[in-house]
Structures are given as C-alpha cells and as structure tokens.
Length: 317
Figure 1 (cartoon, rainbow, N blue to C red):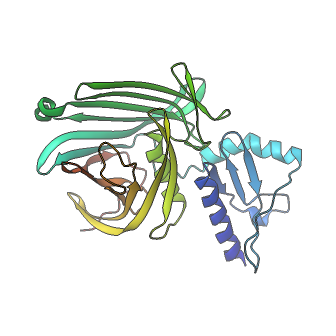
Figure 2 (cartoon, rainbow, N blue to C red; figure 1 turned 180 degrees about the vertical axis):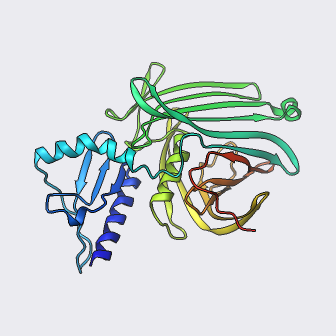
Figure 3 (cartoon, rainbow, N blue to C red; figure 1 turned 45 degrees about the vertical axis):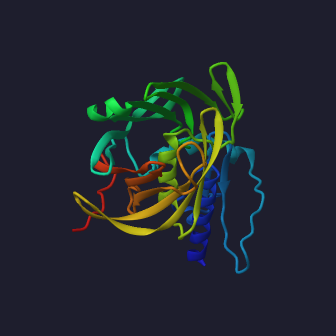
C-alpha cells in the first residue's frame, strides 16, 4: 500500500505542476506523529498542504480543511522548502548556444542562459536571457538581431517582467510586459490584458516546459499544455510527445524525446506540427535540436556548445 500511496503523491504533484503550481513531495511525512502533509504546492497566491491516501477503489479528490495555525506555518515556510529542495533541471550559470542553418549554410546563432537570481521590481527573480543573430553573410539577405529577457518567480517559474527587443529585416519590435498574477493581467505600455493564471512568456515557457518534463513521466502521444502571452494575445500551446530517437552530435549519441508543438496556422507555418524539438531524455531535459518547416524549406537549430549544466549530459559512443 505504501508504493500505491507514493504513486498517488507523484500523480498529485504532476497535476499541480500542470496547473501552474510548484509542488513537492515531503520526505518522511508518513512517519510523523504530528499532522504532516505528503505534498506541498503553491503558485505564489494559493498554498496547499495535502495528505494523500490511496484506496482499493478509484482515486477520490476531496476538498481540504486545515486549521488556520497550520496553514500559516506551511504558507510561511513553503518558499524556503521549495528553494531548498529545488529540483529544477537547470541551475544558475547554465548557458547553451545553437547553430542555426538552412541546408549546409550557417544562417545564425541562438543563445539561452540562466543568468542568475536577482532582485528585480522588488522581488527575488530568476533572470533568463535569450538572443539570436544572423551571420554577417545573412545580414545582407535578412538581418536578425533579437533579444529576450525574462524575470521569473523562483518558486513557480511564472514571469514577472518580460522584455523583447527584435530587429528582423528592418522590422523592429520593442515590448515590455509586467505580469500581475493576483489580478491575472499583463500591463503593456498603458493597456491591460487578461491572462490565464498559469501564463508564460516566450522565454519562461521553455524553462517551465523542461521542469514539467523533469517532474513527471509522460507516455507517447501525451500533450503538454502551456499558455503563452505573446504579441498582446494569449496562445494555448499544445506540445505532443511523439517518440524517442537517438541524435548524433559532435560529443556522441544522445537519447532524445521528440516533441511536436501544435502551432497556429498563419504567416510562416503551413500547418500544425510543422516543428520538431529533440529534448535530452536525462535529468537535464536539454534542447538538443529543432527543425522547422517553413514555406521555403527547412531551418534547423542544433546545440553547438554548452556549459554550467546541473547534471552531466547523457552521451553514448
């Protein structure tokens, strides 16, 4: 029965993460003679302390009642527990670069990094940085110089502040998003936009998805659901897990999970699932390769260098 209880706790943790909560199992909870939850979860606004039990019948989900004194205790200590038991698949100092090419021709490079834990707008935040640029040759054809910065809550990975500065072929965009999850809204210049409570920005979504994958085991054809606020609109992203595949890299072979994001049909993508993403099937859940079909062909991005990984990358000869 203990094993069944553990499975129930893991399923509950996965359910919380899918709903935008940071959740953990509590070590040794079943051995205490005092009231002690099996699962702690919070999204920065609501906090749950749950005792999970398995039965011989189907799972039942019940509303919980907690004494106010205990609730205050868990609310006060939950952020520290989550940080102390941080099992995100990344750490401060992680940096990855990607070679972007069209056929044999290198078109540019992309970079993603976890810069640090910083105080920003009065809050402790993860500082995520991403940028992409074309090579000198492609600058004459279609110059790209894009910068993305995301400051996120370290407990929930929900964005607090997102800055986008894009220059693509002379088309320039500057965006500054201030997220307010208490009111479920984003301030863009002088306008307010309503968002779902678990919305991500373009950069935080990447680290949030990696965390979801590290917290749960998914089956083939399972779908990850992530809401992304972009260009003053809410986009419900659906990411389908297709299969596992071995990818050959300059370091060796890497076992990868292959995903197909379901993208909005529009100006560039011809139909849904025109993109494939290869994620290392290890503790890092690192993006190894991306292929995107566009109207004029296929663009690929492949991992070219990395440093500061939390775990060794699983590589075979």
